[in-house]
Image 1 (cartoon, helix red, strand yellow):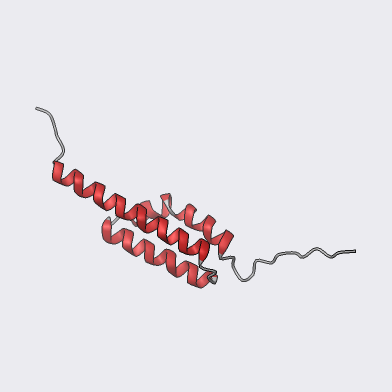
Image 2 (image 1 turned 135 degrees about the vertical axis):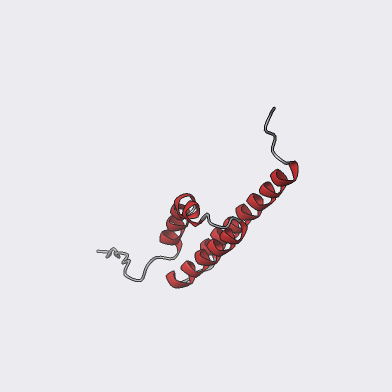
Length: 92
């Protein structure tokens, strides 16, 4: 007896995974192009996390583990924290 996955369940999983991928891609694009403050950027990430949890309930730890580092890198690059200082170079 072989254990076969229900085709409808597999199709649903693929649909939800594709929607999550699009959600994350759009959120990252907004962070890169939006000229947002750090608080606004973090709100975008929080919304993406909420949408991910709506698609995959109970998987918040997976979101934090897999997508958290990606969002952190984008936030650090495009929405720096207010305490992050950039040193200026003086011309002589």
